[in-house]
Length: 335
Ligand code: UDP
Ligand code: GLC
Ligand code: MN
Image (cartoon, rainbow, N blue to C red; front, side):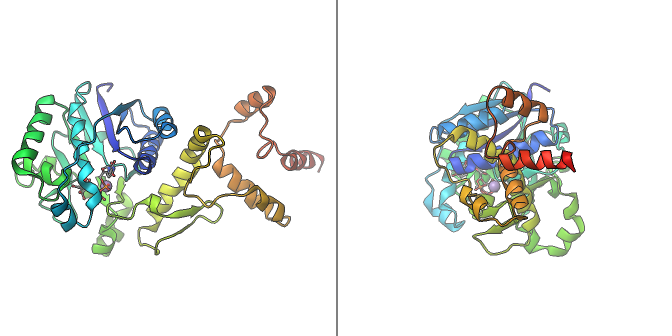
């Protein structure tokens, strides 16, 4: 299995957060495959450090940009020219087979069975089902294919200005040639399908294995309050529970890793910030909420790890080892 990998792409710090959550979700569902992320030089050092902890390989690649403003404008996504960078995944020739996943996807159950499929397997695009969506696809790295894809770009361009236009042009028999290359929609459930076909979503949605937050508004476009588990910043959406899944994983597993890298440097986690002064204003009883909030933002240490830190003089005075917590623990023994 060492020669098979899940691959994603993040050209910026924002998309890197998506990649971190995706990587964590793959690990949580016990994938046996390697995890690779392609990044560009723009991605900051703290983000690279976190990516290196989650992924087996972090590879820096050049930005490839279609620069095709006319087609991108038609899709109302001028930002997607850089998705040509995705084509670099064909250069990962140290792997024999890979599954590419957009950084705005979230894995809900183990999907290692995708490696039984052949290039190019993908799910239908919800907007035009005779095209495949390039948010999740199975491929075989090959420098020759990479060169042919670039050649295709120079000869024909991309009908949408992004990678999906090129890949559908190049693998043009996908719709008709081999049904085994059609992935079930539950491997790339676009969040917009919730609106376009609600009864189908209600009927089949619980089987979803991968949710894809396709479209301009991404999970990281919202603000999240871990205390109340509320999202704000955008209107309420029907795929709310998937967004909450994303935020729960991000706030509990990724934010602590980012905090560790940024140390005292301020960074915007996207979570409503917890102020130490809040503790002071909490009336008694509400401190439980404060403690659970603080805990959600803390790296989760086992009691053995915590004991070791305590013995090394690294007590968490503001959190688990705060005076109040110690007092509570003693009180519980004395009761
Ligand atoms: N991407 C990126 N930087 C960008 C835009 C896109 O790294 O500025 C990558 C990222 O992996 C992303 C994928 O390209 O998930 C496709 O873009 P996006 O998901 O925004 O397109 P959509 O699925 O909404 O059409
Ligand atoms: C699509 C895909 C995305 C791709 C973009 C540009 O909507 O979801 O993965 O990058 O189009 O072609
Ligand atoms: Mn996407």
